[in-house]
Image (cartoon, rainbow, N blue to C red; front, side):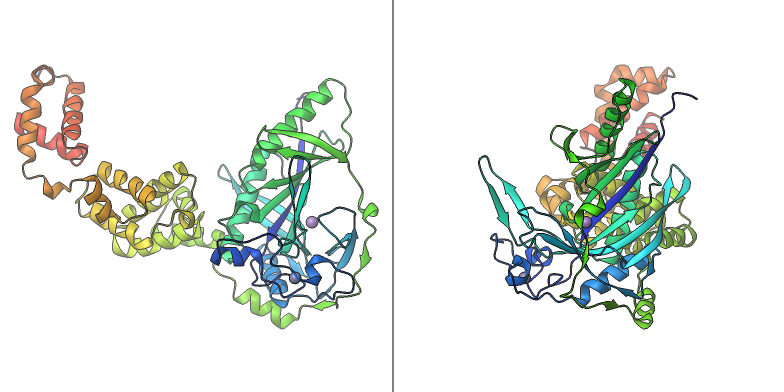
Length: 474
Ligand code: ZN
Ligand code: MN
């Protein structure tokens, strides 16, 4: 096919690690600090080192090296025996010392892989390298001036760089979601904060020059940003415009990328060895210990769920996508039938959370509440319709099912003293439908079932209603 366009995408993802203190000083890490202290004023978690004052002496945070090693091992990287930091020189107000302390020549880790499942097919994405570096300060652009907040300066980052193995914007999204999932399982970052994960994407079409799109936040925007850029490049080529190497910015509000600057090369940064920090040696013993302590990761969990609970691949994949939900399912499966536990955790709960754009952790739901609801449903205390309505209200109000049922007057099946009376009433007030059904019109029965459900605000499920109607009409 002559007009088929080939795409090459490589991603560089920055992850804010959740060590208690910053990477090169003892200041509290805002990532962790902020979860306990709601109000964080600008430029309050700072010291001479993370402000970049002359003469200040950085020291490497051992915990950061451990977290970075943990993440690297989880994506099957090889960890360097000896590694060190370098200075990446640039001039910008977010970095007052005019260089970012990062790793260049020998990164902490190299040559890893992440496995994707793309519409049922396995695909391996190669990780080129993972290095540690400091987050720069945050710039807040106002109308006529810019503010600088140095709280962010020195937040530990790992940068995870892939080979250009991704072939579509969708694959890029699936990769990022998988990466975020693995990091969530490891608990090395705050998965509830979108800004904890930022990606620069390199994209080229038909073997042309690559364009870098900067600072795509979270996991949801990547597909949109790359789809836009792909079409932009394709149209440019069609018009005979040559794509040149440049850096562009993703603007989520308008859904477009816009030119920032002609791409600088690595040589422009003039990397030099950082003389204020010592060489890091990750001992074999330490690597083995961290490797042994890795939790069960999503791929392994998925395989185990399929085997242990006899789930379909699709259901297992849905459950493991969020560690909290996978854990919830395993507790629920001990107290209720596996099929009910799976469908409630893997389908109904996920659907409700997705609708509200929340993860389980963000929803503030308690695991016990969900389990209680599943058990009530299993005991047929609630119909499926009512149970789902209760769950939706639980997400809205952050209360357990009993409180919700009381507040919104949701009826339990057992509370309905006489379903027969309701069914009789529905039959007598819908004479035509009843007669039509008797004449053999199946549709009319469904209508009557609907009326009974409506009459009971869904407390009677369709099956029970149908049975009761047939019983009375017989
Ligand atoms: Zn500091
Ligand atoms: Mn970087």
